[in-house]
Image 1: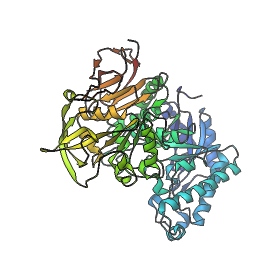
Image 2: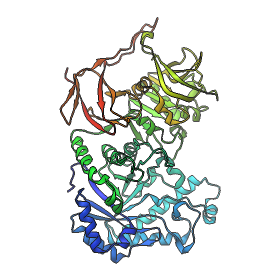
Image 3: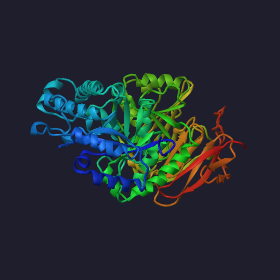
Length: 588
């Protein structure tokens, strides 16, 4: 039984430690770890780089660890130097074309399966090899097609071997935190999920400024949702590490919290010796206990559906930037036909039928938001029949904005000032064929940031994404609130605030409000529908001072008004790096 109600805690013991540590030191380190945090499982690695841990030693380690009442599983990191000859592959990952590499990898898998009933592959299972063998085997195919086919075939071979050695094996593939790049290195969870028993999610986000990946912290939540929707019931958990968090330990703690708020059933800490020396370990138990208690109240994660096909690319990490601006999102690899609203990015447009599916969805009454990336990628595939928005190839900068939603009277229009100038595509549109909900002002001119079209029984919005996604953080609260209002169609709550907030919602109207702001800050949580307040589920504090927001009103000579639920805004202050766990109170 796990120590926490909603998830287990695992730790990964890499091969360097396993090979070099004697029994006494292992026991000493386990006692030290257990002073700070419970433990339910240990993944013991049998291979990494130049290190192999012999089967005999693996069995000894397993026996020692099991005396602490933990489950012991195996792990493999797929790097090495076969025959002493390096390959043209980053990190010396294995070449799955070279017969010698394949034989060596099969040996590693066989030895792990001999000792453990469960194996997890560290995310170095990818391939980036471009040796002569790979170039020849690739032929006229793209590297993406070649690598995905090769990895699918070899995945089947190693799983088959492991199950032959140990019929009870549970074989897990852990996917990296760089989901936007899977297709370039042979990963495809959409196919591999049917080969492995389970998948696992890399949710390490680290430092966003100076590390090449520039991962945004919301991704620890979003990645779990994506892989959970890819393999329902078979996402084993999330994997975090403290790297890139030494200057701000809250980055590491947020990884844990957001991973678990996303529904992960296990949290793996990488790796054992590192966790023994990080000052974040003592604080982690507090975060885990607090999150566990909130999950007693929460239900299924909910958000605006984002169609994220696995073997596609474009507008990488945009969803994480939007998630840092308060958009509550639900990433899924399948088109969400029944969702009340859907966001389509350039990645979505890589599917040949994307425009046809979008057209049918909107025509039947759905609300769709497409980005400029989607518009560009689908420009000559029928999207121009749904909107008068056109690309110009020009760009424009500005920092002042005007908000004038199509369903509201001109008296409700708002002028807002951003934090700095932002570079946008200078989109064109036709007056009264398309409505500009948000405009950027530039001299005696203005350019659309968000447009709206009516189509069939639904609505289509075009979101003009800044050339640098990080410039979303320069938008004023009024614009962010408008984007969140549109992106949250069908949701009971949305956020009106400056950038650097996250909103994580559940389908029973509980939600988490998290601040990434540098100081205590205020956000407006907007509730749709009649309510009597918002309750802090930890303290019992009730926010009752909701302010009624303007409702849709006839614009000029229009003869009708769009029906909409009343909206109430509640002002809530949150300390930096802190989450508040809240719920809507509906009785009024």
